[in-house]
Image 1 (cartoon, rainbow, N blue to C red):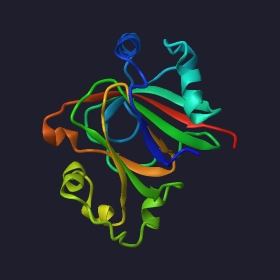
Image 2: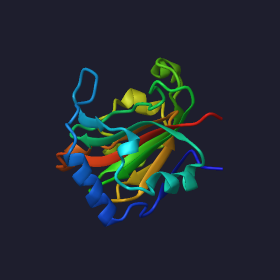
Image 3: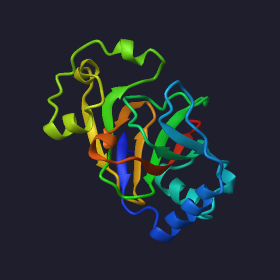
Image 4: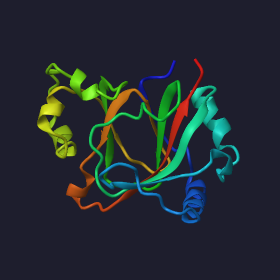
Amino acid sequence: MLENSFEINSFLNDQEIELLLKFYDTLPRTLNSGETKKAYTTGFPIETFPINNFIPRLKNVFGDFDTTVAMFLEEFTPWGVHTDFFKEDNVPYYAVLIPLDTKDTHTVIFNEQGTDRDWKKKLTADSGHMYTEQQLNLLSHVDNDLLKKLSVDKVYKWQKGNIIAWHRNLLHSSDNFSMHGLEQKTALVLFLNRDD
């Protein structure tokens, strides 16, 4: 049984990452949808993925699944708290993020869930979570009233080639990487689904 969120070290090696970045360079960049342009979210058909044994390796970790979205994420403005639950599939499974560079940046996973579009309205009580100074620093771009209603499950520092995975119902956030002088960060992102 998989945890709600977890990390796998060195899932991709440097040669595979170089191959992925060359593949990314062949794709036209796509800005994220929505009012605020925060990233390139450049999707591609999973069948065109340039590493032949990648999906079988993932299935060794996640079991059987289908891929709803495969994309390169090139983020240049920190994302706030959000859910990856809504991707026009019936049975959301895991989000898989693989950093394609090592930078001083993090992904923060919360214990709370977002399984409908009114998830913020359902967070009514103070969670009682005692944030560490590091967590508050990482989440300095998130509204304090929202933070009071959330509790941190795990903080994952980006390491090139590692898998960071979380169930798509979990709320999560990038850190405030721009406050620390980073202009952008790049990762491979997959949104998985499954029938059961």
